[in-house]
Length: 273
Image (cartoon, rainbow, N blue to C red; front, side):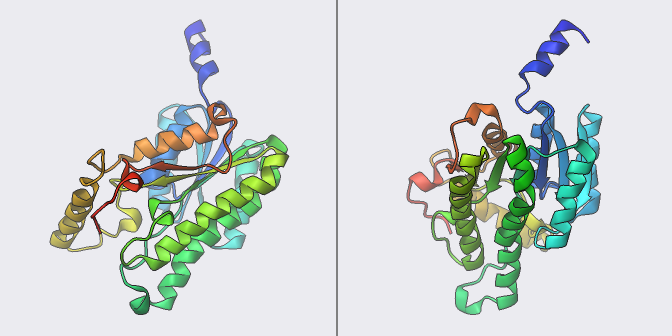
């Protein structure tokens, strides 16, 4: 290895750390897995979509990184336990957890929302981060690691026709603070990012719509995002870089922080729905 290569390895912010990223088959999770690997992390790619999850792990390897894919439904305690065991088995320990997996649910007011939809959204979006943290924390305490939860601006404000999603992400926000209180004294930092409008298709919702409806849905998002101070949707990579920062030593005195990465959405009155 040349001196320049040694230098490149030395400054990478997550060098040799073992990081689990849930929901890493696409969107913010995939971007985060790739960004963490680029910073030297050994990445455990977790998702329920096997083909795309394996593709993320394969892309990391093609770029010279280390990654394994583990199929995991984060709402299932047994699968979550197996995920953490797989990470430790593959790489010898665990340094960080990114709780990114999430679903949107139906766009309905509370009195029209199916209870089954409510239960599923809360199971994935809130129970999932709890189960993953619960399983990971003994290992994170051992290595003085970090957790980053991917919440949402919808966890900070009310939003039309999104009772389950808002409630679940609000829960993630305060779970972040609570875990920071309990585990800061034990050396584990716990922070959250709250993305605003991001140019992803979470859960494949737009892809499942007829072309005209899909196009209309994206146009609504872009119109709403245009009302923000920065006037556009985020790229998934922009959220991923915030996550990497919170995982890295650059944020060593930050815990319990709820970081908005939202183009100014929560700083202004957004007329969008």
